[in-house]
Image 1 (tube, one colour):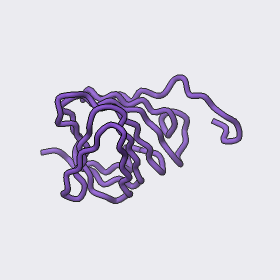
Image 2 (spheres, rainbow, N blue to C red):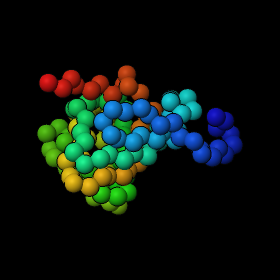
Image 3 (cartoon, rainbow, N blue to C red):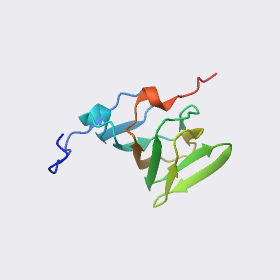
Image 4 (tube, rainbow, N blue to C red):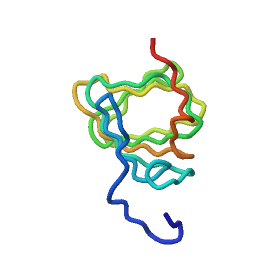
Length: 124
């Protein structure tokens, strides 16, 4: 992708998952090779959660529909549609949707999300 002219993303990269979560990366390592930033649209089903992690990237999340739970350094935070959060890199966080409705949101990572930079803890 050229940084010197507009680019319309019509076919985001759909990240394969096995937990029912939709991840459609519009810009980032998987979609266009951009290592500076990633932008993804996501839908997480009721009951979804990820292991705790301590990423090497800053993450911004904007909730579009529903609500999403964050456990950040031991504090539980619930965001609703229209709210957003910034989580700086090297912060221990868990993302979840323990609620009975799906949540739709946009995540922006800087630098771009990579599986090697997320540092997920193993689940026991």
